[in-house]
Every structure is written in structure tokens, then in C-alpha cells.
Length: 220
Image (cartoon, rainbow, N blue to C red; front, side, top):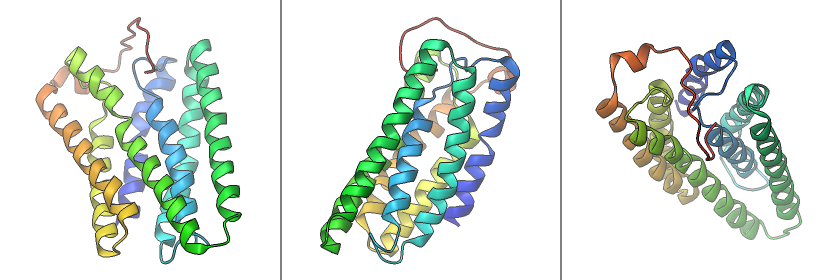
């Protein structure tokens, strides 16, 4: 079921990227969640492998698929972003692969399975928290502009369903490295859904015209 929610959330990202491609601009859509999500997918997929933990192949499967889609989405952002944003994204993307390679190689050098499991587990937990916290950038934009135009409802809903499912999965498997960060994700996704309900307007749901605001910050 968690796998289904992950795939559904990926599918519902498509309208956002169709809009970016159609308008030739990333507008106010934030690219940071996809960078954090890629790092999370890589580390969590590694955590689910038998050499790191037991009975967690579902975690590896879901995050491997998610990682592929995150790369596609990041590529779309890079193509349509402004030059300075392209360079920043490429730098962060390279950093993600460097960090993951260091974690993978470092964990393989640990001969004790329990130490390896705990180390990668803590790192996976930190990556999950970072991924779920990254929408705080767009939450700030929603509150500032009083518009949910750049916070896709379906993505927030599927994030809520996915994090809740993994929260239950982690509880049933007594794995705190799964249920703790996904518990945090459930809370943050709930906040997003509340903001969507509070600020939603018919015009923002149907809007397809670019809304480009000049500002300095991390959002694309």
C-alpha cells in the first residue's frame, strides 16, 4: 500500500512539471524538496538492503523507483531554471551523490552489522526528516502570498498518505528509523493540507499563467 501511495504521489507531480515545461519557467515552484527527496531515496534505499538491515526490501524498492523519478524532475527544473539557479542545482546534485557515495563506502567498511545498521539508520532518519521538512519553504511562500498556487494539493495529500503508511509500517516492524521520521512527515503533511484548505481559492486551483516574483531565496 505504501508503494502505491509513493507511485501516486509521483504521478500527481506531473501537472506541476507540465506547467513548468509549457511556460518555460520554474516560476515560484521550489526545487529544494526534490533535491532532499533524492538524497532521502538514495540513503533509505541503501538502508533497506539486506547488508544493512533485515526484512526491509519494500523500503529499497519504493525508494529506488522514487529516486529515478526525482532525477527526472530535477533535470526538468535544471533545464527551465535561470542560469544562477542551474549552477546552484548542479552543485547540490553533485553534493548529493558525493554524500551518498561516502555513506555507502563508509558503511561497507564497517565489519560489525549492528554498528552498520545503526549508523545508516540514523542517517536515513535524518534524510527523511530533511525531506519532510523541505516543504517548509513552500509553506512560508503560501503564508506570505496567501495563495496555494505553488503547493500542489495532490502531492500534499499523497505525501500525507505515504508518510502515514510508512509510520504504520515502521510501528508494526518496531523500526524507529522508519516510524519516527514518517511521524514527523505526517504532521508536516497535515499542516500543508490545512493550509490548502485555509487559503484555497477557485482561481488559484485553475491558474496556469506564470506568476514570477522577483525575490532572493532558495525557491525556484
